[in-house]
Length: 110
Image: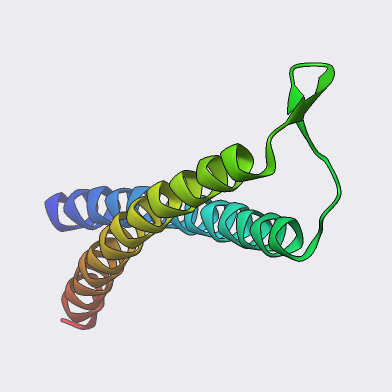
């Protein structure tokens, strides 16, 4: 019975790790989407001579194109750094998950 209890604990732990990994994947995908949106906004801003506007809460405020471009570049830089960190964490979590899964499978085969 102790072996079953230990196996059940490991399965629960593995499921918890899988949930955390799924959350990390969603976080990465969200950041990738934000980065793509920021890139697109920056490209559009650089291609136009029109006046730029920025959402501030429910308001749409006119803003200097250069100022907005600097804000977008800063946001892009921050997102790029955060995305890299999340990707590294995701990779580590995936390795840990795989190790736990392999260990559990070996135990169940014996």
